[in-house]
Length: 395
Image 1 (tube, rainbow, N blue to C red):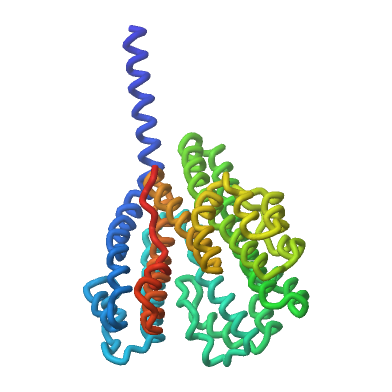
Image 2 (cartoon, rainbow, N blue to C red; image 1 turned 135 degrees about the vertical axis):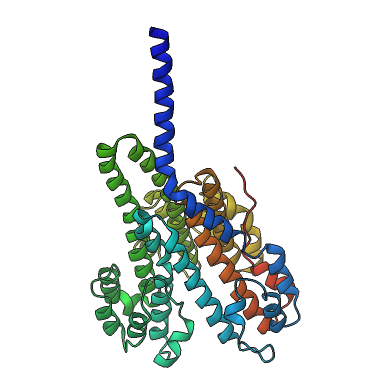
């Protein structure tokens, strides 16, 4: 009888674990299936290289016929193509695609994903700040903006209408950008545009990182209430968010350090623009990089890290070209690799959605770059070098 009771006890435990796992993962099944279907529609790398070899921009538009971009490009004349109009169509598609994604995200995760997608708002704010700095007329500013899936167009138009940085600051009151931008304005006359752009980056990524930490805290509280299910969810979501968001924050810091070192800024000024807390790279390592004698030393000093491994490979090309683009591209491709790996390993989580957001953004950037360079009659091989490639999955 004891043996039978033990057997039934084990069976009951097994089914309890199965039910807990099913309850935890079911909200992500539909989302994951939709995202997988959308990911299958992304343009393959071979297609992008064919566009690079195309004779004209009109050939690229013809090549996009039958894709998800068809509806958005349908009314654009094939002759005398206006690149600005094409870019606007691509931006509209990106906005609509993200809106569709938000509809299938589990309710309890929408806020976090929306925060991730708000990187488009950060891009717009930085573009606007640069436009005000360079005295671009207000009527020209909207051309460079990304339609936002989270910010109403009326709000964006209001921001664009700002006559000065002081007026823009008033428009930012009540947002996560207000305090950082206000402080940066005090140093703007001495340090120029970089200090303002860095302040916006810091405000956004600090807020995003707080969202990750806040999720961990909320799930910890839920864990006391709901037990095993919440603890499993906490562990999975924390792993996903810390890996993907953490890589991005470290990469932004590295790009900032390399860019400012090339411009000759003192280490103490660079340190004041870093996004802290960071992820894999601790604060003392970032400060050491800022104080390194040159870019090569800064990169070789972190060669043992995830980021250093990809940067060391790209360093010869960067030194030969005299450009930081190969290094920044290597970091972007490394992040794509992290996103892809997490989306497979943690399929029943936020990972597939986060990976798709990044993959779609990269597709947009690649298409925009190819079309711009093609319009400027850049050689196909040079265009191909500009394409950010999605690394092969390595588990």
